[in-house]
Amino acid sequence: GDSVTQMEGPVTLSEEAFLTINCTYTATGYPSLFWYVQYPGEGLQLLLKATKADDKGSNKGFEATYRKETTSFHLEKGSVQVSDSAVYFCALSEDNFNKFYFGSGTKLNVKP
Amino acid sequence: EAQVTQNPRYLITVTGKKLTVTCSQNMNHEYMSWYRQDPGLGLRQIYYSMNVEVTDKGDVPEGYKVSRKEKRNFPLILESPSPNQTSLYFCASSSTGGKNIQYFGAGTRLSVL
Image (cartoon, rainbow over all chains, first blue to last red; front, side, top):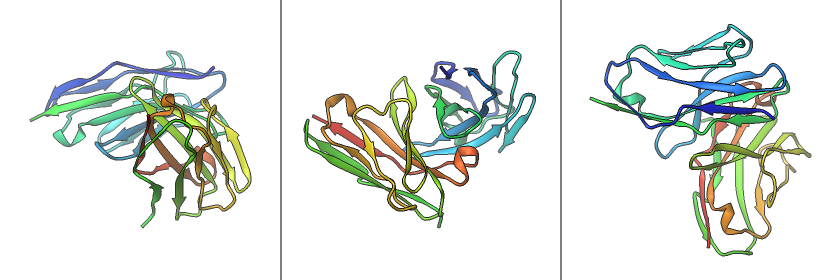
């Protein structure tokens, strides 16, 4: 079945450091891929998405490229801020967009 | 303001006592879904609904029921809660299936003793 695997956290970085959070997936079809962010005490918010191979999703300085050959969708940001501290979830949905599969989440701590 | 509202936010109950967690959205969305979040497991989908009277199982439906009698409401029902249903629950909604942005509620933390 479909699944998403994320790197274990927590990830601790200093402000302005480069961020990579790895995400790989297993899917039977051609899924769309998502990154969601969860701030403390809140629900999830969509950060970015990509719907086909080689698409790059981007938002708020975060980027991720849909790599079909490596079944990956790694999240990157060139310079993190303290306000980026949150839990990040990678997710996929197959063609019908009804069922969603989430990774286990990666907690990011950014220190001033 | 566009929002998904869950109630209650916190609930402590005992094994076997039926409970309902309500979810309401004000965006006229067709698609609604319930998830549970557990440490190390991320979010797992319980049930989803494509429209009124149309519901289907997600990945972990056992022990849960849902109904969609009105477009705005999608309650989650635990007929006989057990301790392994202790979790953080999220409701979400989206237009035209989950293809577009899913809006999440603030969560309901449930403890079953």
